[in-house]
Amino acid sequence: MTSLPGAAPVARPDDLTSRPVGEATTPAADEAPGGPAAVPAPDWLPEIDYDPAPAGFPADPDTLDTTPLTEGVRPDRRLAVYDAPGGRPLAFLMPTIRGVELTVPVAQREAGWTAVLLPSANRRLAWLPPGGFRTVPLVDQIVVERVPYRLTWYRDGEAKRSWRLSLGQPGQETPLGRTFVLGRTPPPEAVYGGVDILALGSIPDDPDAVPAGLRGAHIGIHTWYHDGELGRSTTNGCIRLTSSGQRLLLEQLRPGTPVVVVDELPTPPPTA
Image (cartoon, rainbow, N blue to C red; front, side, top):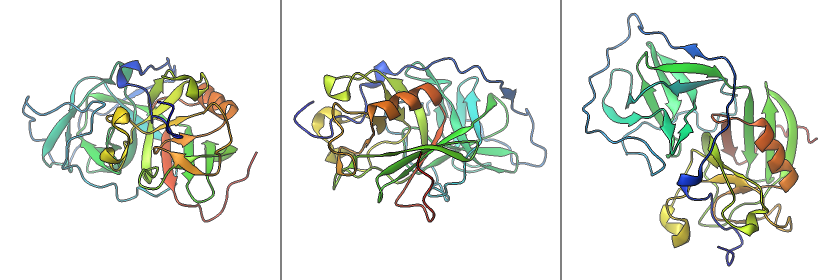
């Protein structure tokens, strides 16, 4: 789509790809002494995929917290996910989404259970009982500030680079809150400048507000064929930066990297 200044959040979900990451992983503990038991999940529960996640999951109480999330979860098998420790099973989290190995950041731990950022939803958590997943370190973080139109890449808590952005136009604002890098996808049209897109776990806050051709797409980080709209609200909800910045993020970031969108940080980070 070239008639709109913002174009699609990401390409079609079947085009998602991921790269080997190579870092060490740690099996999760099989038992959590003293924690509530998990209610068996019926087989008919939905699987969380690229489409919007089922309703009923709890809100992320710290969704605007920019404290880095340093650990991720990788399911080894289909895992039931719950609305609370010892609560109701609502869906299954799969080892992959559209062929991409899934890594979801850990947001909380309580009574032996693990809360992760929910894919294909905004500002929601899913709770996992012990077992059936591995944990991996997460060293990077992306912080997006809507008011100054700025994206900052952090590694191990240290600001590495910052870039000026374009963000979502009125009615299609870039969603606030914590999410993560789901995977990467090839650019569907020439307007993306021939650079891959980072698809995020978040979706438009109002899916009906985006153009019909973009329904079902996720929010993404991508570049554009020109930089004339940086510092403006012109996209369909996506986070748009320069091609050089996008190429660097593609080189450095791995699936599961936490992303948090806020209006503005109290103290601006240094700009490289």
